[in-house]
Amino acid sequence: MDYLQSPVGSIAAHLSGATSVFQKYNIDFCCGGKQRLADVVSKKQLDAPSILRELIALESNPWRQEKDWLNMPIPDLVHYLVSYYHGRHRQQLPELIRLAAKVERVHGDKANCPHGLAQLLSETLDDLEQHMLKEEEVLFPMIVHNRLAQAQMPIHVMEDEHIEHGQRVEKLLFLTNQGVPPKGACNTWQALYLGVRSFSEDIVEHIHLENNILFARCLQD
Image (cartoon, rainbow, N blue to C red):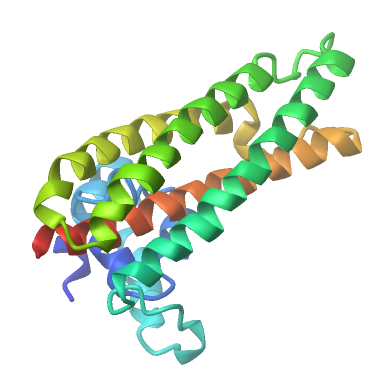
């Protein structure tokens, strides 16, 4: 594969471990997955040779094998998305809202307090819950029952909503200093930022699996 001329989403879908490389260099491989790697590298002024070396190294590392998403039966992939990612987000966000509210209440007088984080997390939960329900009750049943022509429009709607989710994740990371707590932060504050970082990584992987693998497979059929 000519990595520089390939869309980053396609690289992430076909090369096991590539998502970790992209996370390291802050390359958007989910909502921005249709961009060529060369364009992303140029725009962000990244070190192309280093990125290429890391991607090429993955080709010969058998221990980095992940699930074979491209050949997994679509019903199994859908089940994994719902049981793992949908379930995980429904566990993560209420606890993060609780932690954020406590940090803002106790440390609101500090300059580096993430004011507005609890509200942003609440909005994230509300929007994401509606999004996941539409997938679970409308889109995914269409896909599982092979009504792919009927699923085309809902897929594009979900992709548009994924862009909004990605923008909200950027705001969450900005408010939390990319998930790095300030020096001397209490245990609750540290747990909050660690949780936000974990949620952000999970939802990026979640969107990647839907946009670049599940939806891509459905749209090409």
